[in-house]
Length: 631
Image (cartoon, rainbow, N blue to C red; front, side):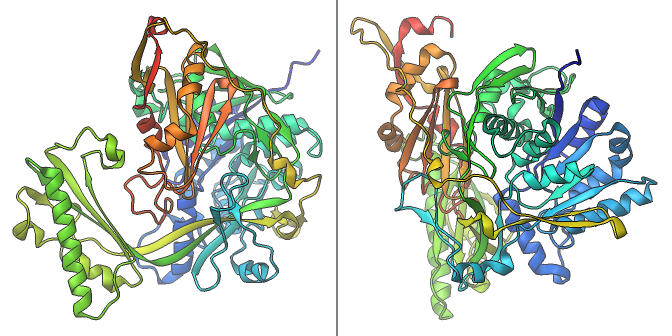
């Protein structure tokens, strides 16, 4: 009997800017043991940076790590030029979205370097069709660009296409895994994409390897998508950003200085094991994997992807060895008829200025100085007949400004006065920048410096999400070169149903049994839970996972929509929705209008909600004293 086929996939990048040693680690330490290496370079912020580079073109005077047309140049510089011979010798295939806004240009660059290194017969494919920038107005006129909401049924808070009056830089649809699968079916060793859902980088190879039926094997495709979700943020699942951070920082083989990048070992039924290369830092545990499972998730019963809807609620994670965690129980159902699209437009300009201030009353001094700078800048605007600022914000960093009423550092003696402002024109912000330095002699004592010097305005890029019908966005596959090149249109096919966005109901999660005589203690949530938070536009999510199933009823009882809204109310300006994940004894909270507009345009210090999970872990909960005996 032939041994069971196991496909091993490593992830060498979570975003553009991740460690440049990631590919080298996997190629060197794993060698021929990896069937695929995937790398996710594209975040919402990244698309804005690439779009700005594309618009500047040859006129830009700044050095850029983006390639011509807007691909991720780091893939060429740090990966392909240095490692192409070893990658090809190992027989490892590469699937990456490093193509950004121009996958065809990156495909050509890869082929050129391969030829220079004597590599013959390498088949490289590019997936395009996601870029809707030039089609946006036409599609909008036809009613094909539809509103998007972050909480199903919440019609009060939706993103819409901003219209041609805004300076649109980019609009890209999130394509699925089928073009990747077809590229691999046709013999490609490297598949370059633009905007696809992150998990498609793993689902595509597994559809190819296991020959699943993409029109009916929903559970397997859901599991493969979950594998992609677990590893697409790189070290997030191997101890990075982990609540119990010291376990990772001080782990063997270098800890934080040598973090291992994740690997999934995938089975034909969809189950998989998460691990990392031996002799690397970090750790793979139930906690690290569970935290990544809830990262940047909205409704865990409806993780809507182009090829399948993933239901995470009954997924189970189990430690099966040192740095080995088994993940089972993903369920899938047919997708909706729509693709999510991500757009960027420019809404004026933004400036951020910093002043370091020390001494007694540092926070109060910082707020007074910031207020004075804004007032002087507004006087300048009046002198020159210029309109007021669109938005301004002053924060005293170091005094736990993000914590609002929960701050315990109001008496900090060293803070940074951060002043951020938005204006339709650059010169309006320059009139603010010139008022920074005078504060050193004309304002509060203890001002020690102005950060990196006089600040300069930059475009205020704003992100939005919308939907487009799948039939309007076919993928285009380009594979091979010269006379052997094939260009193929790949429309979406298969069953879809809009009502599938609503997940089936689950039994209610348990609540603690009533026992009035039981002695209780009040403790911070971190004693009994892990947490991780992330962002989707102007919406944040916070996943809270019980450290032990015995704590879950108490977390479920006390962390309600109302209590979280009250605790996070200084940040959460919209709705708070709560979802249950009984499989990992977790709750997921979705907070709309909580990031000041989102990662690109927000004036907040935490523009992506990365600290929100840590903040909620200070929430006080009551638990029976006897349950804490082992903590």
